[in-house]
Amino acid sequence: MAAFGAATIYGINHTIAKGAMPHYVPPYGFIFLRLFGAALLFWGISFFGPKENLKKEDWGRILVCAVFGMGINMLTFFKGLSLSTPINSAILITITPILVVLLSALILKEKISLQRGAGVFIGLIGALGLILFGAEIRSDAGNIPLGNALFIINATTYGLYLILVKKLLEKYHPFTLMKWLFSIGFLITLPITYPEYSLIEWQELPLAILGAIAFVIIGTTFLTYLFNVYALTQLKASTVGVFMYLQPLIGIIYAIAMRKDHLTIVKVVAIIFVLMGVYLASRKTTPSL
Picture 1 (cartoon, rainbow, N blue to C red):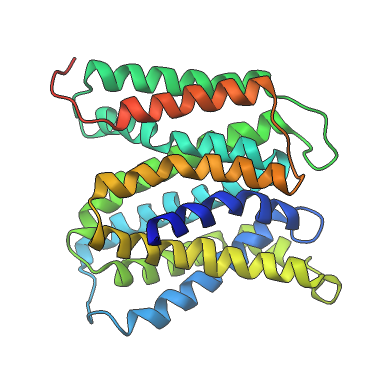
Picture 2: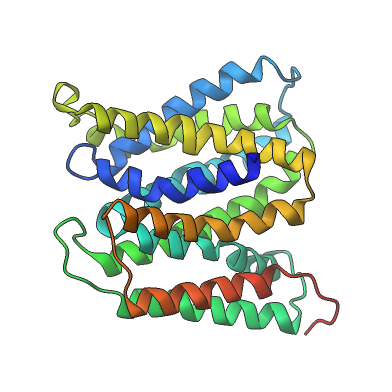
């Protein structure tokens, strides 16, 4: 249930966050709220974890992780979502596992099996097809190709973050890391996020938009992390990984049900290619190239 809950929150987040942007909350203003809120929540929960001091030699990696995982990653996702559509974002961020395989080969010199190589190729074809042929004319999506390209940057930087943060997770409790990563992320993005945050007219925000803001901060940023940690204590990592495939499907179904987006032939073909690529790239094999 915890893994399903995390997948559901991630899936519907695309539509809920999109509903607040850009009319009520500018994308970078949303990042200000998300990072600040998450930092407070993780500092609060860190008191229930072990008391740890970060070693001096790890601060460089922590800073880089904050730049990629809490800085560029979030800025490009929310800016992309303000320019594109919920279904496009649900499809394109699913390629993160594919990019992790590719980046691991480039950075860590890990070998790629023939099957995983095929998965990377198929998944990237699906993503590229959506970027090149997924343009639509919509009043709530000012530049869909640019928004889709930003989703790819988002997935790439998150993939880099996952690779870089692995060594830190082997040394420190997750609560310790998260409170520092979100705090540093908040500070380094402040020059970009605060100007848009200051434009928010709080007295004009409907209750539904306030609810959307709370959902993104508490649900998407905080609860999903806790759900995934709990799920990993109860299930195998491979089983939890299966729920990754539910995220784009839930995202698509919810966006259509709320009448916030619609399917096209290009989107259908793209999601088939991306999910097939993710499946092949994530599946363990023995022979390598």
